[in-house]
Length: 472
Image 1 (cartoon, rainbow, N blue to C red):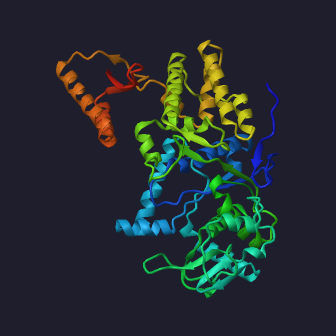
Image 2: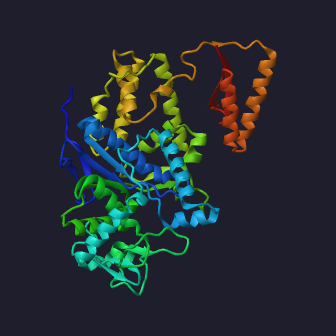
Image 3: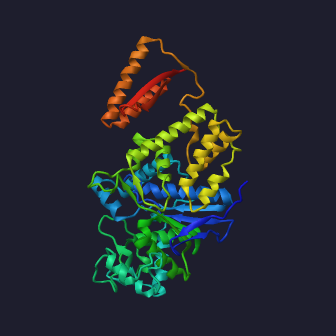
């Protein structure tokens, strides 16, 4: 067996790859910024969710499931939420409950494990207010025109995470210009609510009734569930400044600590077909819409083909390549009779690849090698291969044929054959018109009567061809 190595992670705070040593191996703690629930999450939102799911799995493998605490929050109070609820004419609670449910359903399809704790911002208002009071008492925050603001110049090493001076940040930042600020870089901890918006009494009653700023939410939730100092804080590279920089400022100044988290990890940007994703360009892709056309494993595989710190170009070609790989792996799994047992262990090569700063491309290369061993009928290769794929978050049970335990029989009833062909044609028309809800309904109707559909792409024309059989 190859020598086991330490977990190495690239720390944005120090700008180098470092050996990960937890504060307490009996309670390894990680916080990742979660969604603001006002709409379907887009594919860029999915990247940190998938990336840190892999890290969560690895930490549990190394330290034991009971010894890892993973906190991923939900932001359910925000300007975008208020605006969308007003636009739809529904309550804020109704909107956030609906969109949080959508988010959970979508990421579950991507093979993402639930975090240990999923705190909501609105359930931690008192913790936010207490943190703000600490900052005021220590001279790091002040009240102005009903607002409470963080006094950025009061923290000499503000900007350490993004490695920029105050002047550099002020020059490149889109900061709110307000006459009540002592310094342009000062940011809001508490702000008055407008009529109809969520509102709470201000910290200590020293300002207008209102609601917290975005940055203080994560500081309060991380502090409550993980402590003043914890191991890992993660998120997208776009959060380094100002969100994570401001989290650090709030937490350190309130608690009097040298750091908030000891390791800061950030995934790279995601673009679509070589361009920045935006609604104006028509290339804005939600996870929900993506899953109508592609299985969750394909989306996850396509995400993990690129190292998490590198930018990723999300393309249709990439998705087609990912699906082709998983289709081939499914065929191998069927041929070798691959069945994952609860005692199967992932390959050490896959684990070692992930321990090198989550090198998922290398881990996938090792999966290809294991698949090759399966083809040559190497002893134990299939079980190890499937366990390794499952460890990476793939739903290997779906790699088998849809009716792996049923016998497929020839259809001799002409009326049944005619009905099925008609429904298959209707489903094909629905897919072409992008009415995926109707297409799924027809598929489910056929499945309920024992009809199994299989979609394959014609290599000559690129068209989707649907075949069907009856499972007895």
